[in-house]
Structures are given as structure tokens and as C-alpha cells.
Length: 87
Image 1 (tube, helix red, strand yellow):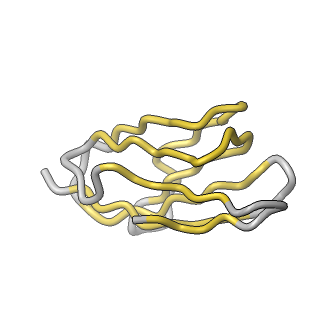
Image 2: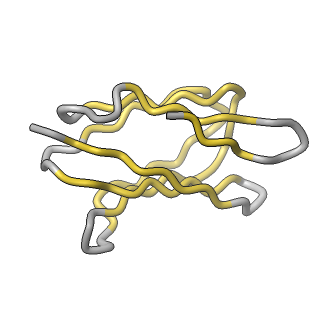
């Protein structure tokens, strides 16, 4: 799945694989800095990672379910995406 991130130039974030059995690699088409938060179906933050000047981020989620990823750039732009875990 590709989700456009709008900034001065077009950016994309990709989750691979999605759905997953627990490990998900997030890939950006450019280096990004910001805060990644993952929320469970109850709205609880289950993962919080600072991303600094990186194009990839690996996350691990243990429980099956649908999660919402929220990425906030260092300039304050907010982007969300859905992650599905099946195990």
C-alpha cells in the first residue's frame, strides 16, 4: 500500500508486508525525520519511535488486529495508515 505524503515534493510511505504476521518494514521514498506512533483498535499507543533522517523503519507487533500508524513529520505534518497483523 502506498500513501502519499505531501510536502515540497511528493513522498510515499509503504508497508511491507501488509497484512503481516508481526514484522513490518516501513519504507519512505526519501529520508524523513519525525515521530511514528502505532495505535491498537482501542486507541492505545502500542509503539512510539522517533525516526531521524531515515528511509526505513522496522516495527514489530505481536498481537493480531488492525492498527493505525500515525507519522508526524518534524514540520508538523501528520499522516496515517492502516497496518493489519495476522498471526
